[in-house]
Image (cartoon, rainbow, N blue to C red; front, side, top):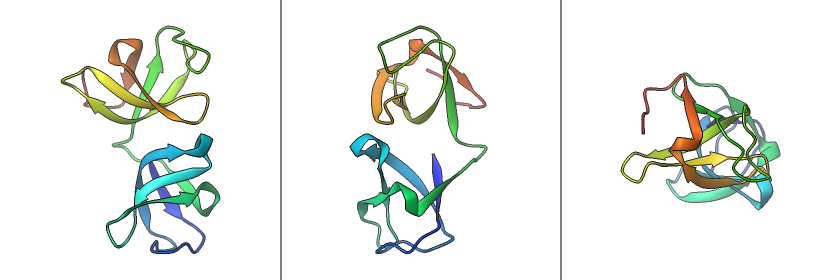
Length: 112
């Protein structure tokens, strides 16, 4: 997922886009690499999501638990093709690792 900074935060630039590495505290903070190259958490309200053609989306094929519902589309942060797992932002707003077999990938060259 890509976000754009809209409010001044330490070591990030207003107007610049950043790749989100993970979410923390139930989605209230984005973890990303700042302008100094350090992984840091920043308030979600300081950023807006920017749709990108290389962002990976996945449609859930089966109900996995209370945080994944069949038919819903989720943002994928990363795919491990060796382990056949993907890190998905689920309905809780947190990112967790799930088996790739639970999803159909949308608009992506990534394959498990």
